[in-house]
Amino acid sequence: MKRKKNLWLPAFFLLATLIAGCQNDTIPDEPKEAKPPASSTVSLTVWGAEEDQELLSQIIEGFEIEYQQEADFEITLQPQGESQCTNVLMGDLENGADVFAFADDQLNTLVAAGALEPIGHEDAVRASNLPEAVAAASVNDTLYAYPLTADNGYFLYYNSQYFSKEDVQSWDKMLEIAAGHNKKISMDWSSGWYVYSLFGNTGLTVGLNDDGITNYCTWNSTKGKIQGIDVAKAMVRMAKNPGFLSTDDAGFLEGVQNGTVIAGISGTWNAMAVEEAWGKGYSASKLPTYTCAGQQVQMASFSGFKLIGVNAYSEEQVWAAKLAEWITNEANQKLRFQLRGQGPSNANAAASEEVQGSPAIAALLEQSEFSSLQRIGGNFWDPVSAFTSGILEGSISGKNLQEQLDNMVTEITAL
Image (tube, rainbow, N blue to C red):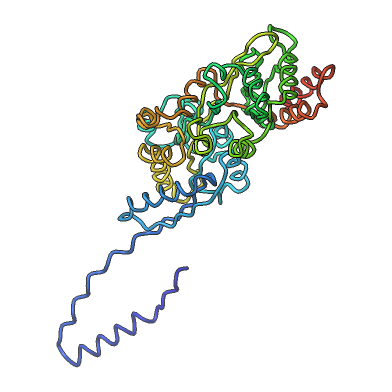
């Protein structure tokens, strides 16, 4: 708060000076040179994943040291999952985080809401990152965020004590082996993100319409070599297999650690935990093929990228952008790989021998041939989860498969 000026003080001191001047002729001391004002304090709030808090603390500490001569910092780090970042931010955009991590599929929504502005130094960011990562951080060829990772996809983890490299080419073979050992192969059917793998290479399609909000979907199609009901029937067979387990990420890790899960579909964020649990048996590969309509279909995947955004409403735009650049620079992406096993989007970091030697990264690169960017409207997720829940519970099978496919697609494509 600004203090009010005491207007009577100048007159008082003028009178005192005149009186002193009458008493002696001494020349007053020259005023001392004023000290420069203390550096301003920069307050920033950063959102990042719960599991990244230790890493981000280290990165932020390095940032504060790097720029300690330019400003004092008050940087608050708060846990916020990348997948829910946009929903939370939209709740109070003006008071949201200055710098935040988010999944690339949220970019269009953030740009449309005015939460992100085109970034500066665009040429430098484009030149230092993988082209796919730059594309994922752009809308209509304009860059709106800083690429952070190029590994937000999924592939197959397997324990080589049970499977050979040939075995893991076939989902059917793997289920047979797992059932024979009274073990499980896991996949998360509660999320359409993973369920897409069964539809993605069949000729059946799903995606975002030009309005950027609604979806198109042909997963219920009754035409073509592979029809929607063919995929649904394959899913019913999988669900009944004693070697199959539908579980989320936490369930996958729990099974890996207690020995009940010997293979599963997941991403690089679990690489260190899986390697620790399986030791020498730790292996990874692209997704296998599965039997559908009497043929072998290569499982597809969504590819994804993690990005760092700068809130357009931040009161510290310049410093927020500096911090975003710092979090995503080559050195800190290498550090992220070392501490968290996450694949860099920075081209130099991604090309390093250490990164290239990672089984998880190698599997992700192998799967990239069969992957596509996730661009899906919000109506996609719940209908897919409801459909797969019905299959797992046994309430969707046989005669009502097509009806339930039709219902799912109607909800996915709803306006």
